[in-house]
Length: 479
Image 1 (tube, rainbow, N blue to C red):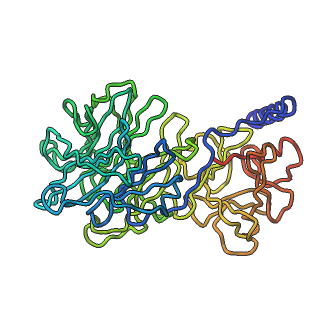
Image 2: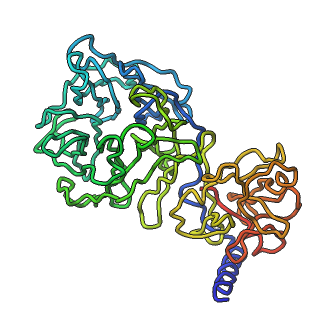
Image 3: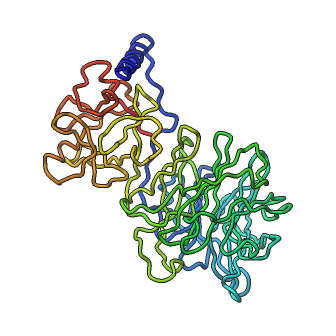
């Protein structure tokens, strides 16, 4: 009863504000962005850099491990079809002659730098980090100079160098084996005096300690940094590069001494893992970028579309580059969700009059709720309507083949399609401009004209939108 009264008061307040001042609920700061996956076949360890010249620059590991390739486009999706240029090829002999891995492109001090790992023709597992430089405006057409190997105090297997700045200080982070620590690789951090020179002594900020970091191999590698709200978040990849590959997360305060390992906290469970339902396996070695309008963070990563691999996974060429929006929890931490199914990426729908609440399913019942940390419960793919052209259907992100549909009593559930004409009609809607705000969206039932998906006591139903309250309840924002 108390919840019903609170809901009624809130709804009346929204309507009254709209009637008296002409104001609507604020549209979300980060509107929906969608992409179509996969973006690039046979491209692993993807790195995307958004530059001030209006272009995205993309580089990744190729299956032959013999060269560095690059693309550019004015949109993220455009990288999928952009022409690819080989900017550098491995040496015929000696150092930088084998295992060309995980290139990253960065723009520092007016010049372009590519960080990558390479082995030697004399010892292909003598993997070390190297740097290329060009002063060309367009790095695809520039002449690259080899700045050489990044000199590290410990001369052992080391790879996956990345760079970032916090508080005006530039850092380098990478993965390396230290025999004194044990098998596998750990994550290290050091300051840089220039883009290719470490300053001072590096520190180890993470080593594999949890079971999920040691499946197949003992691995922490592929660090990538994103900053928000005074926090530094560093994702990393763990375990063998098969279906056990996954992402972990380190967190530090931006005002802390990042060179103090105690400043970093590891999330005890992986934050991004294989998902059988969506058919995605071994997601990892990611980078971060932002949408074209700069209002959404985007996760860039690789995975495979199958679980079982014959032989060494490093010899399997089919890791592919993918995108999906990165969301943020109410407490300011990133929420990676699940690796979504191939095809168009899903979105979330927030309530117009309860802006902290999202459409989600709970035990298949559709409702609106705040703080949905099980992100995929609140994500839906907007697909061509099951009833045909002109309609849309909302497919569950974590239950592919399940759709939002209204039942005969008007309740909205997430149900599995049985292929029947009746189900297709119940799960199809006309996408309309938001009834309470044209910047939002409302969903009119395909087979119940004039009835819309709305929330009532926080549960989703289909009802006529014949009052101001109903129209507010039937309006959502795509995020």
